[in-house]
Amino acid sequence: MLPILRVAYNYGFDPVNGMVVQNLFAFIILALVSVVFVRTRLKLSQALGLMGVGVSAFIMSIAFFFALRYVSATVTIILLFQYIWMGIAIQAVLERRIPHPLTLLSGVIIIFGTVLTTGATIGSCAEAILAAVPDCKISIATLYASKRGLEIKE
Image (cartoon, rainbow, N blue to C red; front, side):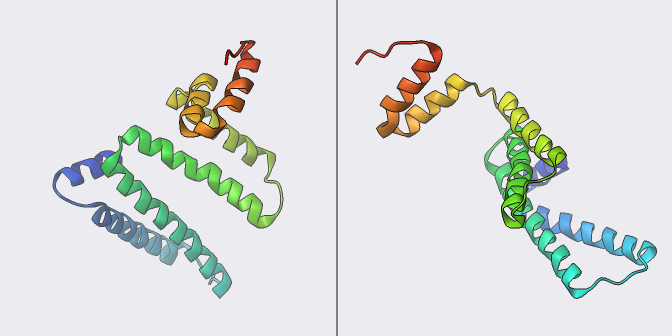
């Protein structure tokens, strides 16, 4: 899908067009499959729940397509994976219960893979924090140095 979007952007299509076409094709295919294979009718609450999931995916698609305009495809895919673990966290909060251990494991694997993919290390994360939060430099630097067995000179 990603190479097709890049080609479409090169021909002047914008993210909204790509999103609308993608969702239109998905709707048509799912409608045909449901007409052929589904024999039960949904209750209103089930239909509203499915629409909520669809809206959530649609919003994620909007963000994904706009991100393709401004960052590389690799960064966009990394950002897309963040949607998964954030969804796990939101679901845990809304349902007020801890997710299944396999679900937690999948979230941890995604976060760990993100760290590996981006090349982030403890040192680079500490440097980013030090650069972003100047008021906390002393305490963060002290914590970082103590973990490394270093001495801070003032």
